[in-house]
Image 1 (cartoon, rainbow, N blue to C red):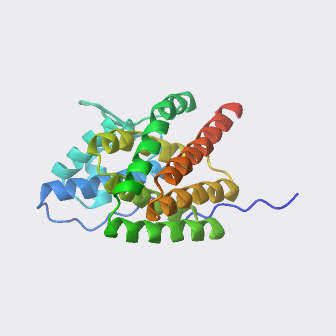
Image 2 (image 1 turned 180 degrees about the horizontal axis):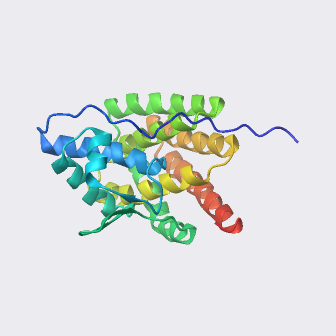
Length: 238
């Protein structure tokens, strides 16, 4: 049998504290704190089931307490954290059966958003998604898991921006973050990464081309892959 490629991961954990950022422009800092903490959660630098402290997180992301606290509220909304007053902050566990239920909601939203993105995309999104599609093709060839996770986050943002439907994209964002963490935790070989990157590239390319039906079909194929991946985890007794 052919050798399965192994996934390459660089250290995404941000184990050393980042120099603090002055606490100005609280809204933008909260967004930055969210992005950094979301990456740490989805790449398992903050492990499921672990107890974390607010002060430690502020030091690790280099952002003050107020923006970090706002980001933590959003991450609790996303289902990645459980905040218990006077006890601490817990990283939630993962559940493949819960992922399958989430997919029932996520699939139609992904198709809707991809199709609308193809219809409504503008020059800046065409440029961004062209770069992302090329990047996805490249990480599939290089089997670079860390770069895939970075591109995946950019892909989600660019597609949602292009769709110009804040109601759909807000609902979808809640589901995508959970899915990203589950995929990262369960991916074992480069074959999964190659397939995931290929499907993302197909969606991006259809949107760039303005092919609404093609984007819908590509998004449906991506969801087929995700569902197959999650069901495989159930079969393995996860």
